[in-house]
Length: 394
Ligand code: AMP
Image (tube, rainbow, N blue to C red):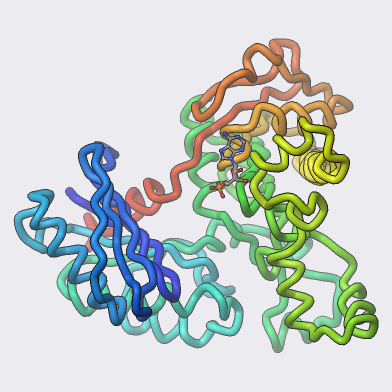
């Protein structure tokens, strides 16, 4: 059965078409600048990349273009061959604890909670409505980045702030990257053939989060009410003292939303290094002796190491540490810098084993008290797996 895994933004629509249950990626692509003058799409299929500059006034047009292109490329012969569409949604709010089948009621509930993710959710909801319009008979699902974290207890998800912030305004930790952390937990649990593992999953890409998982359930995670919290990221600060906002507002006159934007878009690796948010560029600059690039790498590694140590304590001893996403899968330098900062836990990196990128592999020494694995993530596949299961039931 063919399943589409979709990630829509306000002006973009990313898709991966996956053959299930074989888990084979058939095609993928991106529709960009939807609603703008210079819209276009690219599709990767059979080792080739097609680009088409075409008017995409709205998401529904993009979906129709996509379906027609799949037919033109002989990937499908009719729309009915798509047996499921899974939509990624960043923020499910407090109500959604697992993947659900999409319907009007779900859309209404999502729209109620739009204030929780005003930058991300509206674009995704527009994408969902477009697919419902073009493929009304197909089972569609919503896979929430927050859902995997819904097992956290109040002791972890409540902020020590006035209680009515939580009761009246839903202020609490939600956590993100849940689909990736769930995929990592599933992969490593299958590898060890155990369902009672205590896992510290580190998703380190442009965004980043660390999650403590016990027997398949999230105990705590580093992102918070929004994806700004936790470890240092490409352009996000991670945890900072909230008073900085008022202080900087008084110093510079910048508004709270301008300053929040700085914390989201101008901080992290970019802010400290002044070079780039891309860890490859920072690595090159650091190798050339750029002191702020070196400092950025050191802070970055230390914040991740601190969360690993904290979660090892919370889990009363982890069974395995997993590193994933762009940096975790590809950067042997950052991996070494992180692991070297948790030597007190008896964790040691094997530099020979660490000399690779982009595959499943153990990178710790045989004597390491906690083994460390690189586990490539695949959020699109996790979305397709959920969608296949719900499509079978519906
Ligand atoms: P993601 O958000 O998971 O796509 O990850 C993006 C991050 O991964 C960027 O900071 C990239 O610099 C980093 N990355 C990707 N490939 C490499 C690589 N070969 N070496 C170091 N960092 C990499």
